[in-house]
Amino acid sequence: MGDILYIVVPCYNEEEVLPETARRLKEKMEHLIAAGRISEESRVLFVNDGSRDKTWSMIEGLHRADRRFSGVNLTRNRGHQNALLAGLMTAKDRADMVISMDADLQDDIDAVDAMVEQYYAGCDIVYGVRSSREKDTFFKRFTAEGFYRVMNFLGAETVFNHADYRLMSKRALEGLAQFKEVNLFLRGIVPMIGYTTGTVEYERGERFAGESKYPLKKMLSFAMEGITSLSTKPIRYITVLGFLVFVVSILMLIYSIVRWANGETVIGWASVICSVWAIGGLILLALGVIGEYIGKIYLETKERPRFLIKEVLDQHEGD
Ligand code: UDP
Ligand code: MG
Image (tube, rainbow, N blue to C red):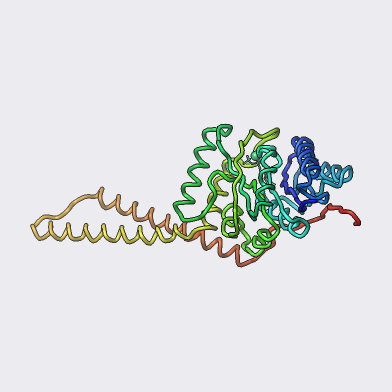
């Protein structure tokens, strides 16, 4: 009999896909159990992130019919990352390994086998990596690629083309639990944990049903969160920028003195106004960047809980 696997699935208004997701995950689990790769006590753990539709009552129904399905109900909507974290922290004490995936079946469930094999081969973290983004719209591909490039440029270590489909061992999760930041950007934090890691390639499909819960606005704020929580380099660049502007001002000063010594005066309304606006813009930009970080410090110092759990449904032999 193998180790205990928990598959954590955050769900927000996913009533349209939930039955199919549950069916396929159950099938996969049964298969792995029959092959002796995972324990009988393995579970699919759905996290209800304050859905407004029937998602939670469906999870309750699944659990009642089959204890292979477990559920965590959050007190309200906290967003994908927090819901995922709630699931991981709940699963941490019950499982030997945990796989996280989205509810919409975009992540190929068949990659689970390879992840489990790598776990037994000694990996504590196995990243699911998309082999291609053909199914994504051009826009999503373009913005996602830009995001990874910016992150890399800013010195934050992220795994290219890896979303939140990954396996983590118990001890990797215990490591994760020690990262106390309120605003947790999992994709950037997980590589910091260390241990032996592996990757599994998979084809990312289209959303099975329903709509993306990540509209552009959320995507942008997600990217901004990621950058400000993983890197302080933007502040460094402001220093560099300030220095460059200073150098330019010195050059201009020398230029005007030389012209003045030759009995000429530099005239020009345009040059004055342009520099005033340019410098003003740069100062506001710099203040904005610094403000982002100060806001972050403010929110972090409050140490508010990242999620609150209303109830947990999880049943085992002898309970
Ligand atoms: N999700 C969540 N809380 C939210 C938004 C999304 O738990 O506030 C879940 C959602 O149910 C799904 C996963 O996060 O399982 C990824 O969302 P989605 O598929 O909409 O994002 P996309 O794949 O379009 O980036
Ligand atoms: Mg999706």
